[in-house]
Every structure is written in C-alpha cells, then in structure tokens.
Amino acid sequence: MNDKVNEQKTTEGKPIEPKQTIKFSPRVETRLASLDLKRLDEAAKAAGKTRADFSRQALLWYLDNLENLEHDRVPTFFWG
Image (cartoon, rainbow, N blue to C red; front, side):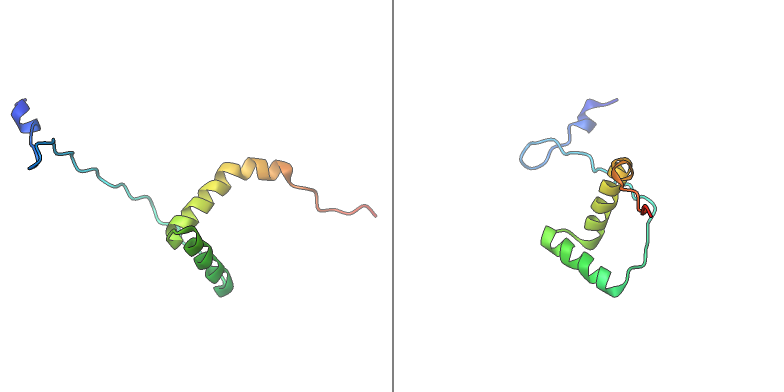
C-alpha cells in the first residue's frame, strides 16, 4: 500500500485521524408517571446530563449492582 496516502496532513502538519463511527444500540423506551418524569428531569439537570444519559447511567449502575441488591434484600414477612 502507498504510505503517502496514509500521510495526509492538516494545515498544521499533523496527521488526520480517521473518523470514528458511532454504533447505535437498540432503543429502550419506558413510560413514567408525570411526577417521576419531572424527578428524572430534575436529577439529570442537577447532574449536568441529558435525560437519556442520566437514564442510561442509572440503568447500567442498577444492572451492575443487581446481584448485590438482591443479596442484601431484607425478607418482607412478619412473624406472627
């Protein structure tokens, strides 16, 4: 292969980085009560994130910690 093709340079003389392609995953949708949606929007705004980014981060955290959450769950029965 011709190395000169790979030596494309910008006006500053630095190599041009190839564009990275963004891979999109399947969409996940849910329905929330209006009060819960408002809480989500407020939490995302406080974190400086979009609603989608905040939701994605929360869902991934939950999935990563699901085993620990189930292990630490207190039984909800009463002795009577």
